[in-house]
Image 1 (cartoon, rainbow, N blue to C red):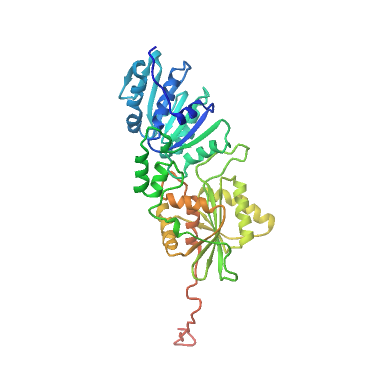
Image 2 (cartoon, helix red, strand yellow; image 1 turned 30 degrees about the vertical axis):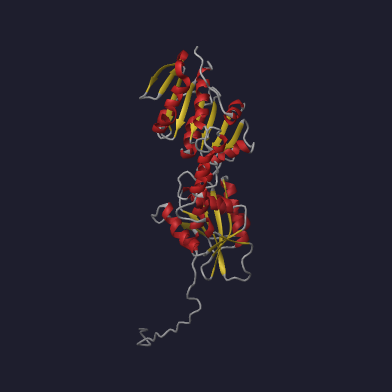
Amino acid sequence: MANIDLSLIPWQQEVYEDGSRFKVVAAGRRCGKSHLAAVSLIVAALNGEPGKVFYVAPTQGMARDILWEKLFDLAGEIVEGSNINNLTITLAGGNTIYLKGADRPDTLRGVSLKYLVMDELAFMKQDVWEAILRPALSDLKGRALFIGTPEGRNHFYDMWMGGYSGAWDDWSAWQFTSRDNPFLDSKEIDHAEATLPRWAFNQEYMASFDAQGSEFFNADDFMYYDAKPQELPGDYYIAVDLAGFESDRGNKTKRRDNSAIAIVFVDENGVWWVEDIQFGRWTLDETAEKIFKAVEQYRPPAVGVEKGIAQQAVMGPLSDLMRRTARVFRVELLSHGNQKKQDRILWALQGRLEHKRIRFKHGAWNTALVDEASAFPSQLVHDDLLDALSYVDQMAVVPYMSNLDVEDEYEPYDAVAGY
């Protein structure tokens, strides 16, 4: 067999030699992600084990543009055939590399994979991995490499954190910047740093997961407090955004969305004091218990829950808790009012934030909320906390004329008839 040059730079070598089954690499632009992908695909195709080798990009056109010529350049004389229409490259011995697009999920089904590369994972729908490609690796216990530049703290961040923190068995993760490529001119990177917005440079060149600035929300508009003023007139409101429920049979299914419970004090001037936003992937009973405990602590006039299947499901255990404790509270059914979620969130929150009429108590949940706001309205980032908070707008009623004395000047024309 002809000799081919599959040399790697130091960071690529480190990732390549790691023995983990699943590897996640967050890397800056021109860092060398595509080269590592091409080398690992060629080696996997030639290892003699049964199974297919897939390279998946956000679209099939991107897969062709990113890797088609790169594979030819590296494989050279061992390329025995190719099909530009199906984007397949056959190497010596009949081993084939398939280039695919995540925008055509049906073409990814029904295969057994021994090796998979998902490039620019942050720009793909999460279900492509969870519902299609992860099962495709199960038969042969295939391996996978996930690479890309961050796009805020979305599912790519979750996977990277799973490997980086050591929380997930047989996963590893790395973070490399454009400066880790010794062949990239450092002056070019310096020029980008000097001329690009800070968030753009940090994300694209430094592989930062800090979300880019939203066109709708500004992180500088978030005002914080440690404790609201004592004896401030007003009421607490609790709004709940339900995203479905986890299984209570032991192994929890990872869902994209969280359920969220927003607890907000609205004063007599209409200023929102956001006490807490609880969020997570809970079972049905856990969700009901969290709502009930929040009501016990803050005693709102009502609890708002969006009308729907999830609301109907949670009413059962909530009613059981009310009967057992002899404590009853009103559940107000909320609706989207035929508005798109994006419009509803903007209508409820954007103006209030800009005019400093929402304040947030310091808490561990602050970071998650600001991350959502900073990336809004990206379809690849959670908006569950924002959604729950926006529902308070439907519940809070401010008595703007409570201090006015209105004299009733009505006098009946006829004392007997009353009119």
